[in-house]
Amino acid sequence: MKPAQVLQNEPELLHALYGALTQPQGFHSFLEALTVAITGCASQLLMIRRTPLQIDHLWYHGLSDEFINWYLQNNMIAQDVVTNQAVKQVPGLFQSALPLLPDFQPDADYSKWENDQDMLDSAWLVVENTRTHTFVLTIQRTVAQGAYQQTELDALNRLVPHIRQTLQLYRQLESRSETASSLAAVIDVLPDATFVLDSMATILYTNKAARELINRERCLSIRDERFNFAEKDVQAAFFRTSAQVVRSSMGKEDYCSETLFLKREGRTPLIFVIRPIENSELLAGGALVSVYEPDNRPLPTADHIAAYFDLTPAEAQVCEELVSGKDVQAISEQLGRSVSTVRSQIKQIFQKTGCSRQGELISRILAALLR
Image (tube, rainbow, N blue to C red; front, side, top):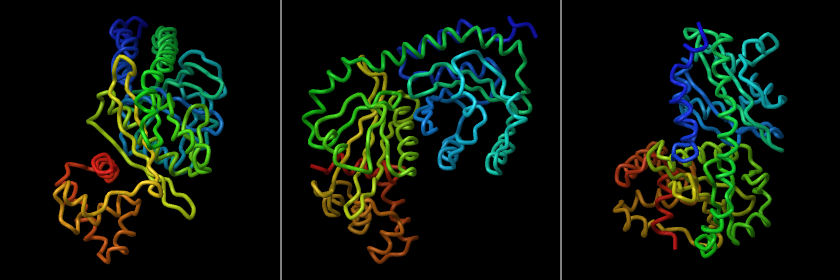
């Protein structure tokens, strides 16, 4: 195969790449076009924290939510052969993952995933290094699609200077100081701790209440301008949630808001509500994170919830318990109902409110009734 035949649509690829600087989809559209052009099955641009090794953000194409959840919950990045090699290297050119495999010893879960997905090879590129992070681009192939040939890697390497330049420009645009200053007047008047995230889930701005919260809570901190949770499960859940909400803000998915609960010993949990910020002249998508402290602000009662959302008293009681951070089992015990009854009532609530997830429902209740 001649190099000229490998990427016949290079002008279109470059157009999609530089479009990441101005279009709400960011790098997602470019990854889709690149995957198709090189005959891959999936691709990712990852922002990887080197210590501890974890994914702080990603753009992707061809990955299911189920896979991303499994990958994060099982800390598969610790075993990923490409990732572990990439964080040790300086930015360079595209390489095949096959030469790394002879020394690779994955556990049973990782091997099962590779077999289930029929994965054979990955073309990978270390795009950029910062003081704390490595940016890596990977494009996977199945057995049917075949291993990467050198001519294909050479064709991909023609894109490398453009990829590197675009990512650097993207990061510079995302960190513009005028974004934070323009939002400051709005955020500072809010009574609850509020954080503004850009499209890479980096914290652009915090109001006074947010800074006070960070100073007094041991279970939460900010490191390298990103949230750092004491609980690993919450860290993984926040990553999944913020990535989904940011994609929503870019128009890649329907409007999506979510809620997480951060447990505190001997006190009520902190309630994190994450909502998309639609892209504008100031911000190419992002998220607004509001943190509510039930000890300081009374949560909506069942009576108020029933009246506002036209629910039955029994359904509204379930909502009140959900908003307080209880799971289905705890609600069952609290209200003296079977687990199956509570789940059936939640389904009815979803139908009446138009929600599809508990986190979305809680976010909607708080937005409507918390005063």
